[in-house]
Length: 52
Image 1 (cartoon, rainbow, N blue to C red):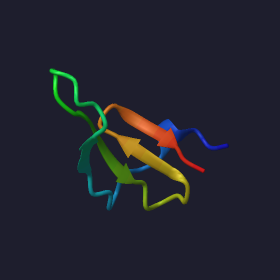
Image 2 (cartoon, helix red, strand yellow):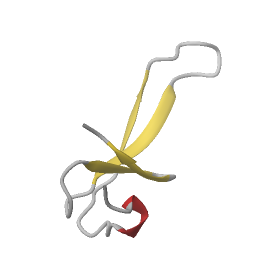
Image 3 (cartoon, one colour):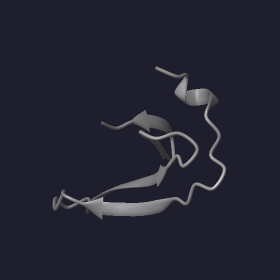
């Protein structure tokens, strides 16, 4: 496994995705981008994550 914090975000386009929670505080949202330089991981507004 690579060090995900060393991956470059060149070419990444972030998009906001919302849904799920319908409680009084509103929907839950996350901002995601596929890390195009390496297959597998995605980036969030708070840092990289791995997907399978």
